[in-house]
Image (cartoon, rainbow, N blue to C red; front, top):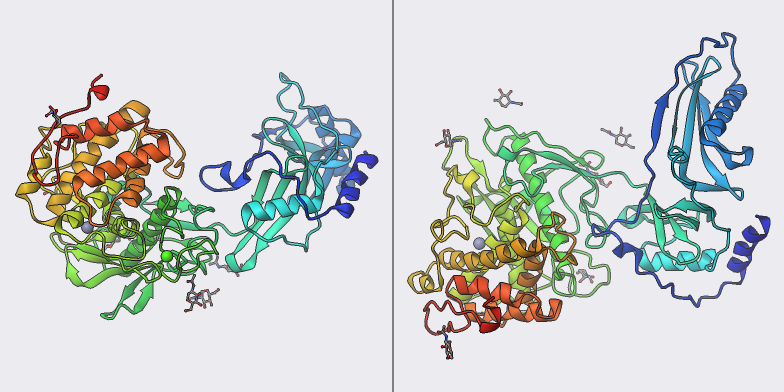
Length: 596
Ligand SMILES: *[C@@H]1O[C@H](CO)[C@@H](O)[C@H](O)[C@H]1NC(C)=O
Ligand SMILES: *[C@@H]1O[C@H](CO)[C@@H](O)[C@H](O)[C@H]1NC(C)=O
Ligand SMILES: *[C@@H]1O[C@H](CO)[C@@H](O)[C@H](O)[C@H]1NC(C)=O
Ligand SMILES: *[C@@H]1O[C@H](CO)[C@@H](O)[C@H](O)[C@H]1NC(C)=O
Ligand SMILES: *[C@@H]1O[C@H](CO)[C@@H](O)[C@H](O)[C@H]1NC(C)=O
Ligand SMILES: *[C@@H]1O[C@H](CO)[C@@H](O)[C@H](O)[C@H]1NC(C)=O
Ligand SMILES: [Ca+2]
Ligand SMILES: [Zn+2]
């Protein structure tokens, strides 16, 4: 054991800056939610019935520790040198708590933890995350050999995570149970105080892959209407650490005490949009207590709205990031972390904006200038209702920002300006709102209203609810010729996109993890096709061009795999291949190759 331990040290001493690139992929890619890998075997916890032979004299702590370790060794089938106590203490009840881990070759197996609790000379309970299932063979312990030195492992982890090494804490060799076996690892810490990141990682000493991690930073939590839920009527949830590390490496709230961060600044604003009051957090906990009987501007209801809007704006940022709305593509961030594009353009959200009622809007200047999302109050009901608390409203608005920045490039801000293109902009916004609030149990033919909560109506605010049922929603391409208002036009476009979406979900299934953009589930593919289409389509596209841009996205992302699902969806609503931009005439044709 000494020999291999000093081998690791010798390697460290002679390491050069040239890295043998490990064959494994970027560890950050391992989990779709962007978080570092974490594996901890399930622990058992058992209480032990007293034997009646308890010692009533005072048992010293040292004696109690010996009782605990003897007990664990017997229980878990360990030799004396296979378990090490890392800490112990005696509480006010006289119970001595003894905590340790399995060790092999003199080093700890990081996630093979066990503890025993001793009172009156007897073990009263114990727990263990290893050797508890005697029906399976104990995992093999590999030798302490390392292809990568500590220095190489650190360089690789810093590169993979973008977080600097925290040198105050010296690297330690440890084993880790990854769930598929035990590996020998270098344990060290990464820390970026400016971004509030501080994490301990275990890097496989042979592949350079991060195999395990522990996050030291305070948990952030937001009490909001968690997607796919839509409104307060569905209930609020305390959502812990929802940030996506890849999209938001510095987290959402900069200080942990206000709804202000790198992606959005959510506040009540004066007539000139100067922030008057942000939503508040206490030690990174953004609580809220919405009260249905009070008006939106009551303190607790303002807080609920501000926290929910901060949640939605950041979720929109993080999810759209996975599908390509990144810094380089012109997204909305203050700091771009050196990843391209122009910064200083986080979204300014105006909560309960007083300029209008019964609406919401989003203004999108070119990349590098802050967009503005205004949420007005809805006054149909008593008390009034807050658009910030119906998730489809801010999702719809934020999507205006995405479609405007992605169509024709982020530098122009003038590519969804014609009546038709502006109308389609409304359509993409409804579509993304439908996608983010969809559930696995939804059916193709169900009727989905938009803004049912704020208007307190089951029909919602469009001329028809969305549905693939022609009886519920009969809209087809020719209807464009009858409509001039932007949302009315958009409704026809969303109806078409929804056919494509449902075709894909029916055939390829549903994945509730919308951060998993590489998934081949139908809903994920549909979102990627639509966002990918925005990047392809010309400035001020018409419906035929926007459909063709989606087909191009199918070609570039999926090698044309979904062509027929797309064409059939559009054809059902009159935008068949024979439809033209000049005449809004329904064409229901599907190419012969798709007629199966
Ligand atoms: C919020 O936190 C920042 C940074 O920690 C601090 O400067 C500021 O005073 C705090 N604000 C409130 C209202 O507590
Ligand atoms: C917030 O954290 C500080 C520092 O850890 C602590 O002193 C304070 O009591 C905490 N406040 C609340 C309300 O938890
Ligand atoms: C909501 O507000 C009403 C009216 O002020 C009050 O009577 C009620 O106790 C509040 N409900 C909660 C849960 O705080
Ligand atoms: C943001 O603005 C500051 C000051 O105007 C400037 O120094 C900085 O480069 C800008 N950041 C980005 C990412 O554009
Ligand atoms: C919403 O509509 C229902 C049914 O029309 C009615 O009973 C209820 O009072 C309305 N709620 C509000 C807040 O106006
Ligand atoms: C579509 O257009 C092609 C070429 O103009 C024509 O041959 C074909 O018959 C049309 N199909 C339908 C279903 O109208
Ligand atoms: Ca930007
Ligand atoms: Zn809109």
